[in-house]
Image: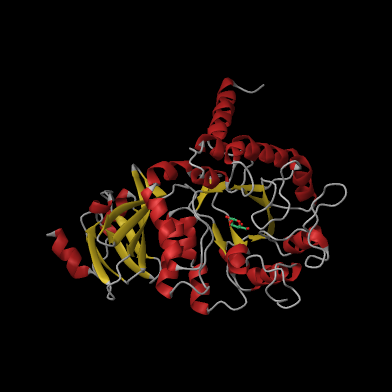
Length: 435
Ligand code: GLA
């Protein structure tokens, strides 16, 4: 018979599970993968544009590249279909049917292919009468569509909210989630529930959203421009008191896709998107043509050190801790923890448009990093290891216009304090600040 102690542990674990999010055991770190929408949209013209239309071929090609070109090894796992995959009409038995010309082998075959490469397969639907692009929505077919997805081997469902009443979503999204669970197949559940309610002037019930969804959208669709990325960064910074506490293992805010490698972002801006998405504990869903992406953008997307920040097991979303005259500092608590002291990823963003890099100088203490044993500080793009720095050390970074410097500061256990190296790139600054 189990002792009272083990029962107590069991009950506590259950209670924690209940309050800590959708209990499907998935997305304990933010999902990573490739998603068609931002780059390939609703291109259904396979006759004139066979390489770029939403088709079986496109997804198989991206699957191959994910595996063959290092993305899967870096953590990208999901191949996600977005809108415009089905026929305009359901079949006579009310089932969704993939477009017969563009997906001639059906979705099970595509999903099998993705699985055969060790990846996972995601699909898109919409809670309303239609998807945003006018294809059939799931309303009236919740149980049937959930079981169709399970039979196709779907691992991830993005459920959009066009052509639906935002007020209905408080029961509709949980109900579709329940139907997904009833299939017995584990599927990550991505919801657009809060964003449609916010647009309708309703106050989203985040307690319920956290309980029923693995991730959710809060704000506008990302577009291929720096202005769009900036607007998302601002939204998350300006609403962080409401948004940040909702994130955690199994339940994430989704600031939308990565557009790195497309047409709209410079190299600096691409680095900024990736760094801030990591600070935000965001899903990393690339929407880019992986066949033609330039190597420097690929390198950003495969930056292991920044991916490690994004995937930090604590799952604490970061915050904007400073904003003044175009300079922002963002900070995210990460592992390891020593005593009372977290480690941190810290991003310095330059939003200024005067065309020269800006210097930012700040002590670790001013960033809230007070561990008396210090922090090992490392630049995550430049591959510079600053060594172990004490809280009173002033660090100085040069941030390019619309660019970023992202550091990680690993809290040191007490004994490591003596190991401060004597020479570092900013040795003079350190000596000054220690006097
Ligand atoms: C909405 C979503 C996008 C995309 C499109 C597809 O706008 O927010 O991410 O899925 O629909 O039509």
